[in-house]
Length: 498
Image (cartoon, rainbow, N blue to C red):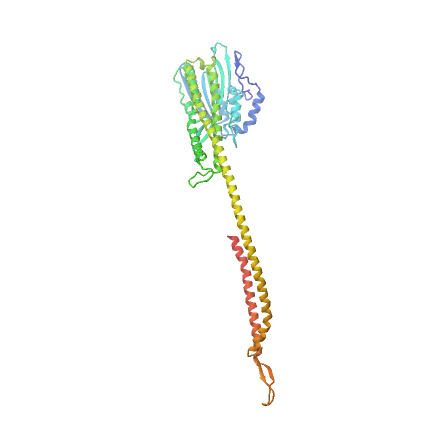
């Protein structure tokens, strides 16, 4: 078998049949351009690892299971050239290292695989929802695509070929040590059935552990015809049910988070906050909006799951498909309706939580607005009281200033009077001291007394001591002022360091 790297990757129109339920343009260039644009985001340059599990028909009643890991492009080409599709059931797993990483496959290997399988173009829509991301992208892409070709040849026995692909988003515990233990995961499943040779090919994009275990446990021990009629439809239903197994626990976790916020919204006092009351802050509003975002994501994922169910039901109801020729088709239809009822029950729960969260969010926002308005009023009243107190203080300061001015005038008058008396005090001090003497100058008793003014010999001590004391006083004041001036910068530096 030779792999054509320029193959269309399209489902060819059957010469012996009629295709319906969806017409896709066979535009080779558009398909190749889409993959070329997205290749850097979807594929790795090296280090590919593609796992393949295949059941090949050995004889009429026995099948052989084969599994291998493809790690190079040469191994991929060798596998595709040697793989026999007729009468086989092949499962191909394309994985990512994490949810926002590249697929573990190179661009050339992906082109070879799509060319080998003749995959219809909608496959690229689902593939583009994966790949390397740095932010949320295509988080609400949930849908299915199908193509059915009714075969009219004798070898096909009136059965139908079909291609069916869907993606499902589902909650799963990530195991990381953070507050929220859940994350939304995504898996896409491509199924191709050819009635002419009774072969099926599956491509599982980012399979969950439950999906992988389900496929690995698929051990056909029955005749090949029984396998087609019973085991494959059961496998398809198992993959659907695997995506719904965690929804109830996830929704219960969201409900518990909402109930704690609902208690704050319903039981907190609005007007006066008590010391035993709930603490309502703006972070609670942010938390409830984040919770609503998760609920909307869950609602979108569940609605997408219901759409996938309706698409699979269309294939099951179609009388020309292989499943509907099965004797257990009614059982499969019943199981499908049970799965749909389960999703609708979860969707009702999520819708109810969304409605409750909207009411709780409004209450919290209005509560914060009311408390904020009340705080503004209280702050205004406090400012008015402070302004009144400041006014009274200003009046007191003005009164003190008036009294100080009056005291200053009195001190000024007393200072002037003191200055007037100072010369007289100095003269009186000098003349009352022993620095000057009055001596009589009569020479005989009969002479009239004429007092004479005499300065003592040590009079010079008085002015010298007075001058020294004056200079000493000025020196003390000067030294003290310099000391204070030098200490002020140090105090400022210490204050700034603190």
